[in-house]
Length: 269
Length: 245
Image (cartoon, rainbow over all chains, first blue to last red):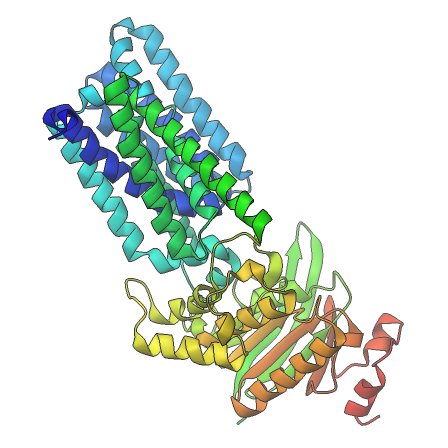
């Protein structure tokens, strides 16, 4: 057996990583096509505030990050509805989250190492409890996407027509940002706050190069994401690299290769 | 069949103090084919959005299928083809089949997957608009006229009793328009679908339309558009003819 699978932390990282890949692509497809790509960035920095608060109050940081980002997601959606431009709503919450993190950081210098492990991701710190929490949140998110697939698809493609046909568009928009918040928190420990949003966006961008319909977009971005996560983790293990960086780097390379391949084919035909 | 499908009484709409619509009274009966015509900014799209409960009027009463709009639930009975159904991102990865299947979603309700009978209805809708052979194509790859037909198929997939079309012939050439009105007439006669169509272009109004109303903030039923807007472009003659002048 490969050496890599003999370590408990690698086994946990691989299981959690595959779950993250699947959830990020499922949610990422909707937010990219709704032109909300920046929301992942916003929510991850808000989550940083939540993590800092958790460390400060000695609460499980994943939990405080979850509460923080889910509440902010609902808030962002409210502001968007109140005619404040979408990006601006994200920027306001983004700033608030970051400010909370920085203030708490200056108050208590003791936990900077822990905070750094969330900022950049650290597969070594993923324990059994973390894994269970991640799997639980991931399965919840996936189940919600499967259950509301047709409605989420409709509001992503054409909000006005969806509303006219009686679909509860506002509630589904709220659901989508809440699921995005959960997805961000699920991914924190492996990929790190700074790189979470890349995993939401890049595999989807790759699959958009080749997919012919919506279902294919989701499924092929899952394939690209799983490949990036597994390959990234293997690289990080053998070359001693930060896992998050290796994963996102792999996914960007994959994107480039697929794009070049597509361009070259177009020239031939 | 004299049942009122839409009944509007004294409907007004104001936005930031501006009068967009004033005292609109309108009755649409089952089987009608009504054209609503008015210049740009006359409030046509606003009127349609009020009918669809997308925006709420400042005052007035609206009944859909005899039911107050605030209590109306059967939205699948109304097919809506928005102005620029062509407004979506041409790179959106949705196949023709997927777009048409959206028409079933509301009827199906939450938590339920599409079944065999839904697929049958979707196939029929694709056949009706002649787009079945394009079912696996990406919607953005099609021409404007073809996309329009796909959006009509989506509306038909909810098996509507009323079809509301906002500027449906924008960007469609003359031959395409004739074909399109033939098609609408067929829906009206054979499938007994009530039709409401809105346009700003008098030249686009066909003699096939059964009733004509003009709108410019207020409603002018049975009007002669050129009197109202001060011009009479080509194609107006048959409107006169239509009204027995």
